[in-house]
Length: 399
Image 1 (cartoon, rainbow, N blue to C red):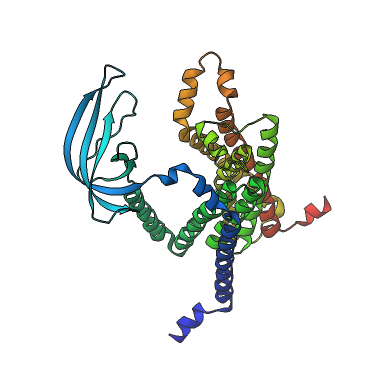
Image 2: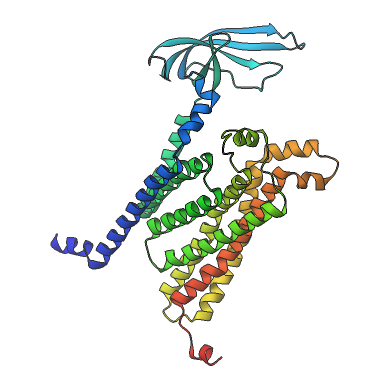
């Protein structure tokens, strides 16, 4: 037992544990202080939001009472609505377990098609102030998503062991920083450009050092990520000005712009943040892949020279960049496919007009700038690995 404990609490392991806890403490402090600074004054935004006056409730459907079909006075179609009863699960002005009645519009001339409610469904309802009746708002999808998230966590722990646990903690920090620092900072009118870069650098630091520890591999990957993200940021900032972007991509942008009347949100900055944050994950993936491959190569051979490491890193990067660039482009196209289809329908005259639209231009910028960030991360990561792992040969010194 004594030998077992001594093998665990070696000087090297104690140093690693201490560094790990230092990283965690720094992450917590960044999150708390960042949230306090970023969220200062955000309560004024919520007070001015007219939707905060609405009364919402989450209920479980217990009975379908009646399905009504009424003629629509504005068209020849019929409005189909479902009257149902439910039990309150959560509501500010309601008692848990309280029963209420609500109506769902399933089919009508001016409504999008929705799935009809069934007994057992968890749904959100809102109080219609004009009719003083509860109306179906949307389905509660939290539980299935949470269950899927639990499956993800279980798989990460099963395949990753301690690194899987660190990856889960890192993912939690990532979500917390985005929702507790970046988003409040944007809403309260802070400098979006500076905040985005600071948050991006912090996410690189946490993701790499928390999962892989502070070592040559993580330092090389971090250097590649820093270079790629900073390049993406400079390009995004420059192209915003060159392309004369307004940031008014859709109706949601107009609503966002009017949220803070005294200090309107800079919509071009929102585009910048979207491009940089969107590219960060792909850049980090490429940098880690190259650093891990070269670290493994070093473990197999202690006689690598500087030039060999450079050549191997560039070859690995060439294999990665094609698939990763395709992944990035397809991800952006897939996430906005409905809007692109709609724009294509209403811009059938020329392809140039479609591509020049601001929404499509932003999607293209995200894909192109993200790909450039990936390409720049490859040589930077490779160069740092060569400095760490490669020795300079006599022939190289003579040259």
